[in-house]
Image (cartoon, rainbow, N blue to C red):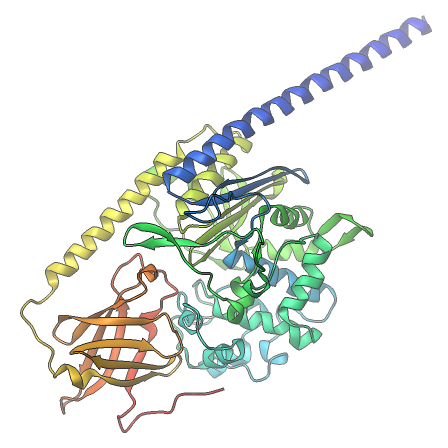
Length: 541
């Protein structure tokens, strides 16, 4: 009797083990089938949006299960993108800055709700009340009251201003909203947040990121500056559109805005980074055994809603991805997708865009790095992967994003057509064009000069070498500046206002196209001729 029971139990265990192996084999086979399908899908996306090169990695249950490069590092050259290829990750840098601050919070050296002036006593906002009240948490949650991209022209395109000078000039940027009243994405205060680190530790932001994050996580290829690039390194070249054609461009040096967007990395290193986040700060494969980069409480804080983001309307073909909640955490965006919390961020610099996406309850992470400015490409890839792992019926995301893109192009074309229709024809400037030439100054940006050269006007932003453009008369006292660097895609209206004496009193700018990147915050500028009696000297710091 006892012997038969033992045999029965052995059979049951054996059957269970065989069933387990069978199911495991089925899972492995299903994963392999999906990854093979994903491989061809990514290549299809790349070609559809004419992305020269991109790299994708997948993390699941604490392991990297997929990492591959597609296309070439630079158009016109045959060298392929590989998982080791470095890309600029742009605003995905912000999560590194908040993680660095979280480490200091864990160590008791700072608190999220400490006033900024406790560590940076010279820091100043436009409003004295905000200067006194703004906290470290406010710096990294886009709720300071500054407008969308406010002050970005201080560093974008590449400027001559140092990080210290940029921070000093924040005090001259007028708020758009009430303090802590609404969300408006802001890069410039992340620069300030990064300066909390040397104020507390004596180490620069770059040194701290390398020593306290890159090294323990094992991110051996990542850099905090393009100055660390060396000839022969596996680096992707950025690409952008020149009058409809995609061409390679030079890297922008982002050292002066480092904590907001200067890190360069590859999908191998980024996979290690998101594994740590999915493990709530725990590093399992450290040479010292299991160690913590940051605490579980820090992880929860970074992934908790801090600032509500309004939910916009979505076109019909993208209605599936419209969230029920949308918020900003500490260096991460938070939303839902089919009942799952999605933690993610995107990044954009000249010639490169990227997206990092995590689904905490599935221990799933997705990294997409590209060397072209097509957000639709990384979105189509990301949602294709999400649908698979969330068990959602597949959507033709390529068609969906192409249709949405077409809708946007049609809307913009209509706006541009209406602008042309409203143009007053057969008008002339109020003054001889030589009267528009001269030096102008904006309180927060600094100096700009307009020169008369061969009966034409040329505009030059003195602290931004790339912003040199020719003025074309539009109507009345409004011109369009067409930047000579056509990769900027940021032409702007330039309108002069005269006083009762017929003299130029001030000049304002506004982007021509709604598609102009928000970092070209021309609309925030108020230039005044230096020759006026109420002139003020350019601030130097």
